[in-house]
Length: 428
Ligand SMILES: NC(=O)c1ccc[n+]([C@@H]2O[C@H](COP(=O)([O-])OP(=O)(O)OC[C@H]3O[C@@H](n4cnc5c(N)ncnc54)[C@H](OP(=O)(O)O)[C@@H]3O)[C@@H](O)[C@H]2O)c1
Image 1 (spheres, rainbow, N blue to C red):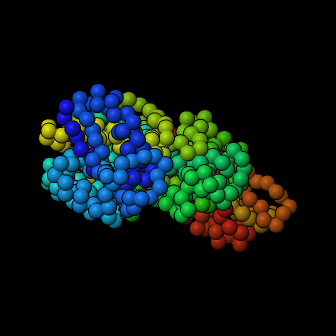
Image 2 (cartoon, rainbow, N blue to C red):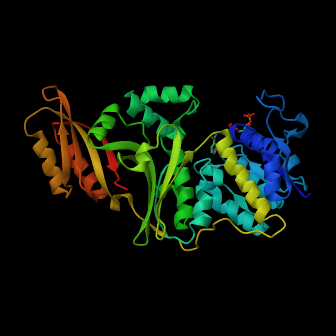
Image 3 (cartoon, rainbow, N blue to C red):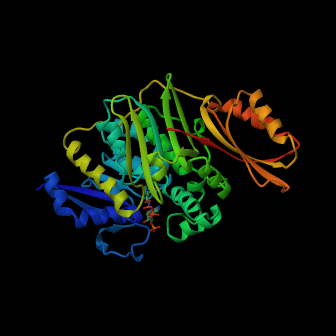
């Protein structure tokens, strides 16, 4: 029976899941492929490090060349993470004629073109299903099963850490700091949570989703990014009163030949299926020209769910590429599409303004909104009598540029203490 030899770089959370699936489920994988897939070597930093599963020490190596330059290895699986040295290792593997599987969203979203150009030049394939939403097979679904469709919209809860925090804040009425601490204790958030809570992780995933949805490669700088650190328990409660949940959404839309990409906290109607996606789960909502609306839900991270996507990519390569030539995974069209400026996007807005409780202030703010063509749908005012009171406005759909012009002027009203928060609302 033919043997496919895999060299794995990294044996952390995802690497251990891949190792367990390929060793413990070897017979079902073999029966599906008609050949054996063997993990021949694994790159680690410390061969003696404690691991809670057994792995033969003779397959562990600390020198990457022993994998990247081994002519008997067919597929290199990169699970180190980050840019350096992951990128150099992947380029070396490609140069040496090996197919590559990676889960590295930071690398693919920033250097995917360079890596795929190198793969094309060397006649090998790079796959990265696990880089977006871990166990949810969204990239291959967009690429293959939905290829008959023009994708019009893609909305995703693509970061489990922030979804866990927002769910905790909403269900238990704890503030952001406390919810983050609990996420860290449970292992859902890193000691340095910046990449998750400031939405860099979601941005990386949106860029990859955009490539598969709209066949284009966007620059990071073209995408509006806003994290969840400014969401207060008050915002969550007011949103609920108005009939909404707050979720961190990665949003991509194509309309009038322009692409709109943004990542930010969003109010979504309580009855929308995305609103009920809780805890560390992920979901992606897709609207295709022929199929209509679809939603994909599941675990966006974790050892075995992410391992499932990585092993799926390995099996795809064995089935489609090894010994049968190769193709390049979703090369974006040569023509660069126009990207919409954030000021030209349209949304409904939730705005919480903290004011001094002086008669007439509500009228002055409403006048400024009107002057900038921002029409108001609802107003909530509470705590009358205290020194600083919140007023919550919900607008009708308006241009971001108009809203920002209005906010600039409202900030200058002497009775306005501060703008508590502005959150976009999407009725999906
Ligand atoms: N965790 C998830 O649920 C998840 C989900 C989707 C995608 N991903 C992506 O999957 C990738 C791996 O994530 P992970 O969570 O598995 O990371 P991890 O648990 O930190 O594991 C990384 C592994 O790579 C090893 N490593 C790091 N730098 C190395 C170097 N220079 N040379 C050799 N080995 C090195 C580490 O060794 P040490 O053990 O010695 O530190 C560790 O074994 C990342 O790109 C991540 O974004 C992760």
